[in-house]
Length: 221
Length: 221
DNA sequence: AATAAAATTTAGACTTACCTAAATATGTTC
DNA sequence: GAACATATTTAGGTAAGTCTAAATTTTATT
Ligand SMILES: [Mn+2]
Ligand SMILES: [Mn+2]
Ligand SMILES: [Mn+2]
Ligand SMILES: [Mn+2]
Image (tube, rainbow over all chains, first blue to last red; front, side, top):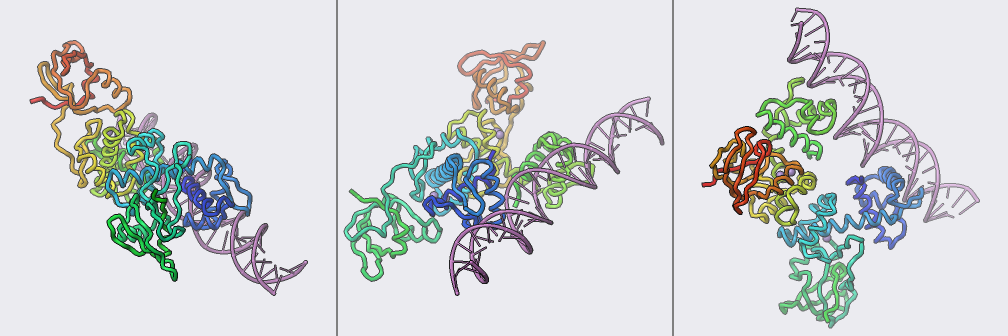
């Protein structure tokens, strides 16, 4: 049996490995993510290593084994399915679901997740546009790129956020775009790269370069 | 903050107090319910007593304080709402939900439970016919009595089970009665008190005295 | 290559929730 | 009301997960 704490470490290591593009994750980085001290991390990674969830050599950081990756992806899957449930069935806002999903992701029942997935209609993305891996850990295809990479005249569909903070989510709410909404880039201010967007309701909004680099979009047609 | 373990102790004490009709619950009884040793119970009840969840005097057993009762009822509420969710929304059978609800009952979010309750249409009873207390710990009215107390000729509606074991739940499934079903007691065998029931589909079934004392019913008209 | 700085590990401790074995209190029987 | 049986508590210990402080290794700088 795997404990909540072990699951949280694996999830943290999984996320950090994404940021390092697969480079071994440092003890300090894990301590930062887990909000604990490096000494505690050393204890835990020794244990996870013995249990074959991670590859670990003293002073060299860690990577996930296949078992560790599979386990981490299952937690990510559960987290995102529960977030989808909270938003689509229980009318939560997308900035209210993360904390609750942090708890629900540890519920241990394969059947429950199968049934929940079916109940939700096998969603491919969560309320923040994050892809939901299937039971084998496979992610859905996605051609999303950051809005900051696009050009004036491009027609896009808003598909997700890279920043999950309440501050940013509220900012996006206020702009008036929702996941799935199409828009056109009217112009990009040469000086500071502020984008002027035309939304589907014809309204125009300015989006800072900083904000644009936290918005995922796909081409529209 | 209250731990999962503390919550489980309070729930166990709550259930045992029901069985003793309010008489102080013994250390051994709690150990039996919690599947642990009496010495562990003594440790825990000292702690729960310090935290004002229970009334405890050495060697005299325990009762719940108002805080303890309120806390226990909230766990019962969550347990039963989650069971209702699993059965009515995720198509679980009534004998499959208890273990999962044992986990879900510890999820900590007032808003989640409010939303879940609304999503389910404010159910008053769970899939086993057990009453769901409201957010103030108040139970719905119920006039249910055990089938074993009824007489030949009585018309009843089946409202719940007193025994939650898979064995008994499957037995009830096989008899062919479901919660909410009406039936008439055709006769009661004088020798062993076996009841002969006439179901709504005209089928007749025999129900042993033992089974009848685990079936809750209300009068039908 | 030597030294300084930063990262990591080790050592020793604390808390929670559990255990066994021993001590003590309660209750039951004669 | 002794003596025995049973229930409960106390004493001392373990494992998980955390901490601080000290030791060690790696990395960066001169
Ligand atoms: Mn989240
Ligand atoms: Mn998400
Ligand atoms: Mn149950
Ligand atoms: Mn139930």
